[in-house]
Each structure stands twice: as structure tokens, then as C-alpha cells.
Image (cartoon, rainbow, N blue to C red; front, side, top):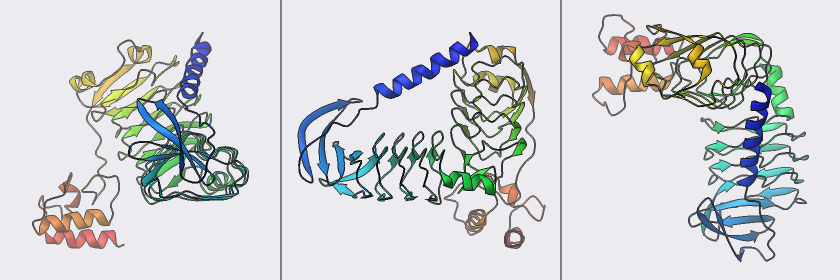
Length: 379
């Protein structure tokens, strides 16, 4: 019965994805010649048109690229079409096309699910800093994708974005924890007890999914969300410390039947209905906070895993990083600048933990702390 529940939920997800896909309809016409077809999707009205090798959807304030001609070998997405910014690369837009290179303008904020999936000739891609989200398996099974350039910022990544690409395989050879610019993209080849570096601020969906070799994972406090499917079917996972998380998302621990030790804190705001789906183990949950704070966490009322769990309340461990006054999980130049601004009276930015800069240990913050802080940073 347990397996049946999982299959039904996966099937429901797949069905929902198909029903909301909104496949592009073929449109005949010249460049920038919008068709007269009016379509309704997600309560938004759009018209479809063509521009060069692209079919697009025109909304009231933006353009979505919905399809690229399969025979195209290169594609330069324009910044604007019909005077509106191109902000979205839609679901399946380039799937199975023959493109070798693609230029994505810095107007694009979202790359949709499966958008470049199974592009056999795609060799490289540069993601502009404007992109905020990359969808499920967006670049999956691109057998010649060897170069991926990601911007120096956090991007919300869905499951298996680069799965099946030579680029990802090469990164795994360098380190089983594939980390780029503060994003833990992949940990599916990790083994044993894993400690995530302080530099990590975001963990992609399904990062450890189906990893049967990982036994425990400790996240830094800078990781504030455990995304959906993070540990999906990690059959030997026993312990997780995710004390910085405010959200435990859907199916994050689905089928982790050996999970017996979970550490979380009073930062936690919500637990999804399916976070602990299909788990038979009994777990000790160490909650760094008060019982009243645990009771205020939004969570499913009849969750069997939580009902069986032994919840222990404890004081939070002191894991402050010296110098990390903005509490972003690492000591860097931004902390030094913040302290300097405070000392000259500019308090426009929040200093979340001034004691982290008390390098002299005299319970006050002054120029002597700044001098020592600078020395420590530039060591």
C-alpha cells in the first residue's frame, strides 16, 4: 500500500504538469506578426505570434518564448518583441531542437520546466544575472553540454536541472558536492556523513534524491529552506541537521525510512503536508526552542511521522561565525563594510549579530575591533 501511495502522488503531479503545460500552437506569418488567436491560461489573456525562429506568447506586460524551430542550429533570444520585454523561456520551448548555442538576454527572469531538455547539440549556455528561477530538468539529457556559466547570485533551481550533461558529470568528479556561487546544485554522489560548507545559502530541489549512500547531512544556518524532494528516497539517511530552515517543503524526506535524528530550530515556520510522506521510522526531533514555539509551527495535524516522533526541546548551540555580523553564514568583506558604516554612524543596514565583531572580547564595538577584524579577514 505504501508503494501505491507514492505512485499515485507522482502520477497526480505528472497529470497536473501536463494539464497546465499550455502547449504552443503553430502560427504562420512573418517576423513580429502576431496571430489573431486569443488564448486563456492561468487567468491571463495572451496572443500568439512568430518572430524569426521563435513562436511567442504576448501578455499585457511581457513576452514568453513558447517554441523554437526544431531545425534551428543557433538562437539569439531578443530582449524585446512588439515593444515588450522577453522575460520567460516557456516549458518545452527548445526541447529536442538542434541548437548548438543560445543567447539569453538579461531581460529573462525565468527558464521554464524542460525548456532545453534533450537538445542533442547544445554545447554551452550562459545564464544572465536577471534569471531568478530555473525549472524542472531544464537542461536534462543534453549530451554535449560541457560549459555552463552561472551568475554570481542565488538562483532558485528545481529538480535535476543539469542531469545527464557532461558539465554536471565533470563537476561531480571535482567534488561530489556540486556548489556554484552559494547554490548546492547536486549531492547525489555523496557518501557517508556530509557537512555542507558555510558558503551554501540555497539547496536545489532533489539535490540528494535517490542517494542510497548518504547517511547524515549537516546544513549551515544560512540554508533557510529545505526544498521539495531534497532527500527523496534516500534509503539509508539517518540524521539531518537543518537548524536554519524556516520551511520544510513537500516530499523533502519522502521514503527516508531510516531517518531517526532530525535537528531543527525555532526559525521553522512551516512543514508541508507531504514532507515526511511514506516513512515508517520513529525519529527523535531536537527542536532548538520552546514547546510553545514548536506548537506554533504550521504543520499537518494528522501526520503519522510527527505523531510517532519524540520531540526534545533544547537551547540552540552556539555556532556563531566570528565576524559574521549580518549572519549570512560566512565572514566576508560585506561584514567589514557593515561594521565600518556603523562605527561612523550609518545604521541604515541591519547588524544582526554585533557580538560576532567583538574581536577584542570587551563587550563593546569600536575601532580596535575593526582593525583586528580587517586583519583576520585578509589573512
